[in-house]
Amino acid sequence: MLVAYASGNKEVQEVVNDTLKQLNVPATVLFSTLGRTAARGLETKLVVHWMKGFYNDLIANIKNGDTKTFNDEKWDPDTWPKEAQGVGMTEAPRGALAHWIRIKDKKIENYQLVVPSTWNASPRDANNQRSAYEAALIGTPVANVDQPVEILRTIHSFDPCIACAVHLYDPQGKYVRRIQVL
Figure 1 (cartoon, rainbow, N blue to C red):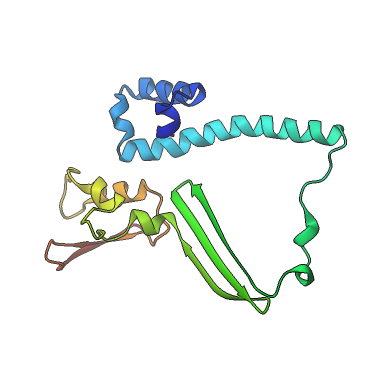
Figure 2: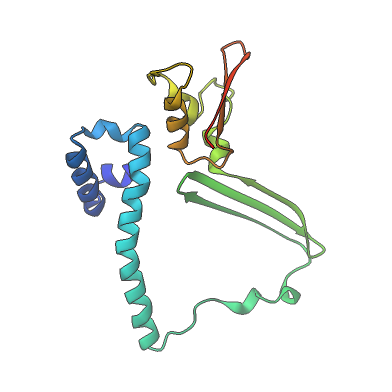
């Protein structure tokens, strides 16, 4: 949403600007917990609108005789090679997603994936760069240190593929607290 907004996509700018106006907040709020949470809702609003167009295109294609919806050439496993490998990479709602597969003797020999939460929740890298979660928490005000719900809200704004609990450690790695929403 931020890339589309910044690159001048008129549809995205319209829904984002309308939301910013309704909330009476500046565009800088897009780089926050609120911004990440709002982006998913606004994207959903846009996708629903776009889906009407996709559906209309599909119906028009069918009416014009185009009824083929997939290539079944490789559907039958008997047509598959004994050995193969592949990779798939895409941008998912949570971030970058990649899958790797290696097939040997028509069986999966190795399957690996790196999901967005892997990147977003990663430890610091070799250059001591923070993960997206850690960076987002820097400077987050906490109203009640015994119930730091702001930390949960910030982490949840990334929509992580992890259990809904956050474990806090001090800078020396000593366990401080576990926060869980049931």
